[in-house]
Length: 243
Image 1 (tube, helix red, strand yellow):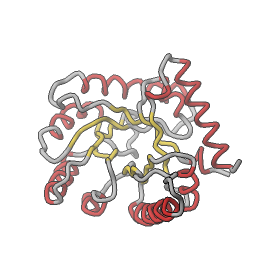
Image 2 (cartoon, helix red, strand yellow):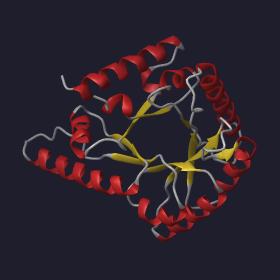
Image 3 (cartoon, helix red, strand yellow):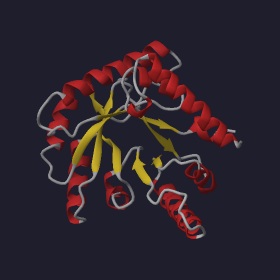
Image 4 (cartoon, helix red, strand yellow):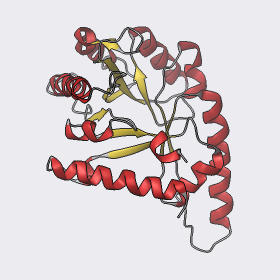
């Protein structure tokens, strides 16, 4: 078994155990495999293991690896009578997105996890309208309060969510947050718990037409805590691609 396969096995076991601890089903949690440190060959190995949901935060890398992975799938499936690899790979933008990069990213991804300002929302809405698209977006909220982190401040989250839902070419489907940069698990848990409270408050409102369902939080160092605090989507990379 390769390092990647072994690492995935460990991560899957950890997810399963975390779900059991809080009485959740494994199906209630979706893993987005973060590819920013991975080569196309490594990503293809993950695809061969049955995974098709990937996240990237660098546009040049996304363009490169998405093309190479698509070519690999096409050629591999063409060699056998019964295709063995997924015909569709879901790429998601999980990193900070500059407004001048919006036109580049929209044709490449199925969702954007890092929508954190009204101006960015307006830019995505305008570009999506011209492309006749309606991308799925997550509201990024800075629940840790760290000044170096992107994300709308906690106090402005509901207002921005409401504004996004007035835009005809956007689908607000959830919220994203990042844990504080610390090894203090109590601080991490507190930040995730606050995120879940904000998520629940927005979900209980009516302006999003019940599309607001997903909470994206938890990465390689803290995904088990995120599961215990209600995450529906995990963004895991280094725990899978490390040697």
